[in-house]
Image (cartoon, rainbow, N blue to C red):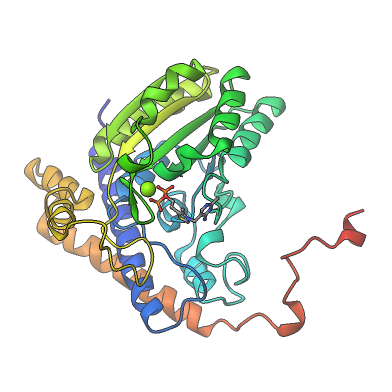
Length: 326
Ligand SMILES: Cc1ncc(C[n+]2csc(CCOP(=O)(O)OP(=O)(O)O)c2C)c(N)n1
Ligand SMILES: [Mg+2]
């Protein structure tokens, strides 16, 4: 079923918030204000947004090393994430996690992850917890095409399948694994084709088309919530920027990048759809972007005004206090 116009506009708004957040964060990174590693999600916004649009705030998601979009789509606070990137105390993890560890349990964002394929276990565990508690929460586990080659992929999905857990495994196939094209790393390029070996449904969807993602997401989430177990989904997408800052991108053609940026931009595709159906006017469109710009400017101000954590707390919240925990 197609989402209502208001719901579509909300998705459009969220995609802009992700894009403008990252464009600003990228600028701040160039100024030297972002501490640690930083991977951009621009180009892939429709995946996080298409899935999270169907999740409740008490549902769970687990991200990757490229998770600003997941965090925003799940309802995380933008200014807290900006402060986190700046390494400041006002950050969502008090400035000690950085870009690869954004997490906000209050909205069910269980965390990004610097370990490729590190999310399968925690996501499957969160779904097991829901099953044991008897609540009807679902968990969405986002992962990259590179993570398909990890052993954790097989182990966790097999457990999810055999125990019929309320989890959806979502591959963001952006066609590259750092600097290597996916086709050079695996003969089975779509995880959909791996689903039968776990005895669960598999789907593949155009990850630039938020309507298509939303449709597949809604079905899989309903299935998981009503006891139907996991689904393995591939979203075919593309990252518009390099793997991380400083990536010269010699492994892909400029024409290819240009094609995806101009013809397959998920935001422009939804914009055209909404304008053609007269569900979005030029003024409203401009107002959506202006509001997101203001929100992001105030996020930077919030981050700048926040202090660095004090030196004496450098390991607080980083290591468990063994004495206190026992
Ligand atoms: C276990 C592990 N191996 C290698 C790396 C180094 N590494 C970081 S990102 C990345 C590529 C991941 O590709 P993919 O899963 O497709 O995610 P994408 O970066 O395309 O979003 C690699 C190899 C890592 N972080 N963890
Ligand atoms: Mg990839």
